[in-house]
Image (cartoon, rainbow, N blue to C red):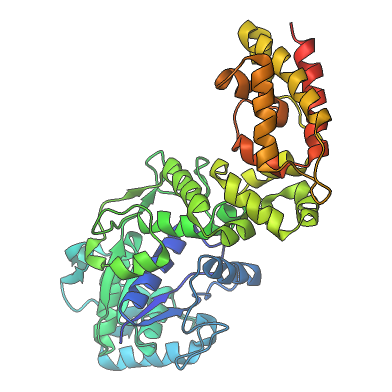
Length: 454
């Protein structure tokens, strides 16, 4: 059975590069009917914090990656924290000494012995990689003089004990892999298949890091900044891998069905903010309405209580009709303001047009009072607090007839009267979702605003 592992160090937040590594491991395991194991490489006790560990769990679960074995899940090969596996690491060290694969140097540390002049790693992504041992640096320390294991020993010993069959990780580990292969062999253990994923570069061409201010770098930041997990997963899948039919919009199920490590490229992938934003917008538009509504509601900010007071069905209808205007979940606050806010501020785009475009100003001065008057004359059915779609159409037709305006000449001023802007969500939907009393208030405000501009 295929067994893969994601082994982050809880010394910081879940980085986007780590999330991509976890995702490729997860998708590969599900594709092959295998097991996805989470292991914490927490041997750096000073920097390993519980809050970072919790953040890793939350980030993976938010992205839809539940692990089959690991912390909180348990499993037959635990414990799944390296800090709790000292006994296993010391046993591996003793086995290495007995096999001659490692030796104790003059300083009392256990070092790996390089038994040959070159190491060949057959990597699924990068092909045959040949490493000269004299280029790998000094023979690496496996056990410090104080008896604590280093990363090299702990990682390989745990991979052996947990029966890992494939190691999928970043290309920055490729040199380590040459050393690790020697440790596997010295332990007399099967050597897993390796696949080293291409580096992720920032928009500036440098390796993506927290110092790169052009893009977010942690999963928590993306979550807080209004990105859907479906969009982030979709984006991460395309950082180094391509769908066999060149599909760009991929659900987790699509990715699992189509994934093949052989299609992972070996050239660095560039983090494209525009592509991520596009995918986020696409997923907001294409999620089932209930899922989109649930994702958008927490981002309605100061208007959340008012949205909740209008009822679940109201929000579902609003999202169904108006989500095309949301490119990011944070756009929900602006949408909520249009729907339930007390008045809207006339935006700079409208004020600039009123001041500089005499034709637009004349159209507004014709439409605004006509629209306000028609609203004042209208009575709602007793069981409604909004215009029906039919009433909204009748009112706009009445203004059209009275002013003699049509098309953009009519609807740009109408939009300005309802939203305070020249662009935004579907106007007909807004008219039937915004409370009638609020439409009246905004209409009166816009009559005054249009009259003030010269």
